[in-house]
Length: 325
Image (tube, rainbow, N blue to C red; front, side, top):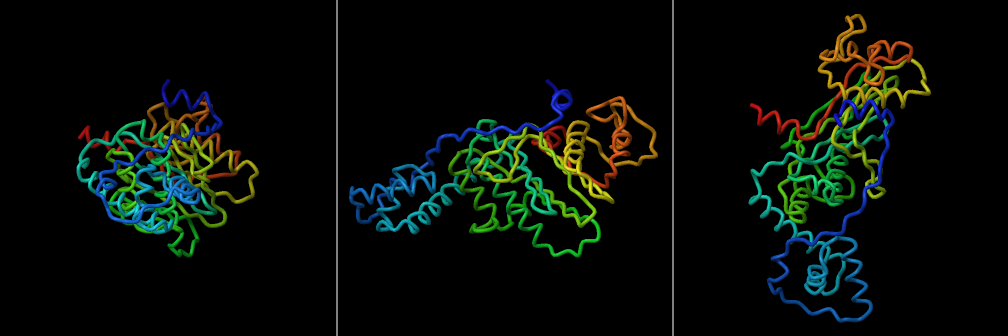
């Protein structure tokens, strides 16, 4: 079924709960290096420490046991040791996998207060994109982008919008309560999952009073462990201006996001523009996705809302464009 048809058949977002995949064992040449250290006793407390470390980090029993032995049973030091070894392994794997095509991945949407961000993280296979470790990486990228957005102390009289390319995104701090940069977390994920991955791009929008950010993610899925993050293959942010409190603003914003995802406009256009057909690229002149008998502009007029800007992400579109060139 085409994207356009599926959007028209399902006007309301239905989010699913993604299953938590089993924790994957990290590639582990480093656990065989025979690092010296006192062995941890087989007491109940030692087993409890081992279980706690594995639950917290997701690494294998062998690696967690080695970490506790190396760090004399100190849980905090063992966790740091694991991350350090995984970081080394991840950078090594990243160098080996560099250049492999990354057509799959996820779009992540995060909204907090008057700000919203869209991020794209790519991997090699759809199987890895459905793995919780990869989804947590997308979450970390979204949180890092949100922190960056909120750190820009603008005196907002109108909306602001910004974009980050792959290299700019990689250098961002990982966000609240996380050490290192986003590229460090990328290396950790590569080390765990063994696929080439790229922090592709990000966009952010901040709005003052009188504006609203509508949003939509197609094929949306959410997980309790990912908090407010919504994941999918397509995403849109739509900046709306409204002069009055509108009880239906959230619903209107979602429908506008659906339209942007499905109809892929290139510009907003004007309400004075002549109605166009299926090939029309001006948003307000396009047939409204959920009722093609009217234009989007005609749908908006009684809503008390005007569209001023939008952002649309499609997972893998940049890779496909590069190949076409």
